[in-house]
Image (cartoon, rainbow, N blue to C red; front, side, top):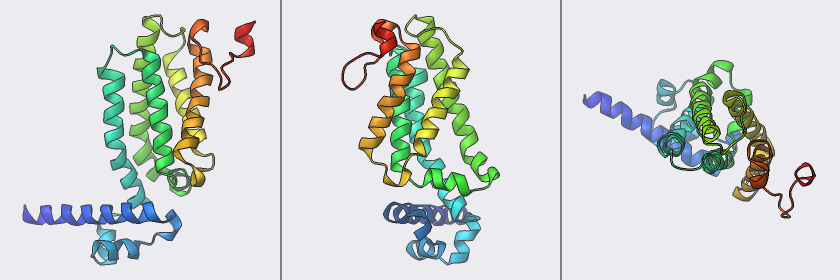
Length: 212
């Protein structure tokens, strides 16, 4: 029991030290020996818990996703009284902000192996797809959203969010993430919302096809 607690403390110390270093430096400037020194363990000890820097970073991301997913689940699944469009907006904005707060994520996912990517992203993608599907189904059943295939729309939404996450990830700020969120939501809303409630562009004018 004591040995297990000690191992968990060391693992937590490594993760906390890595989180601090990744927040202060670019991904490529963080070395495992730096993480080990900050955690006050030997470099070999780091390898007992994490196979590589990529594995360490992806573990950080996966653990950071937990609270975000819990919040989205509460909004999408548990708070069924909320309008579906309001829930969709919250999901898109939360995902875009998460991307802005983890600028190295897209870069790391590009260079990691498929096995490493899937270990982090498979469950995330399925959970988000389910949340979006249930939200869309609820909105369509209530007449809040236009009829469509919920799973197809869910995949489209996640695809747009993912692609937006690749746009200037190193220079992403909360402001640019918010702007991209509004652009994605306007595009989605133009197809899903009734015409009299479709989102307006930034200058307050509706799209050309809505005015005709």
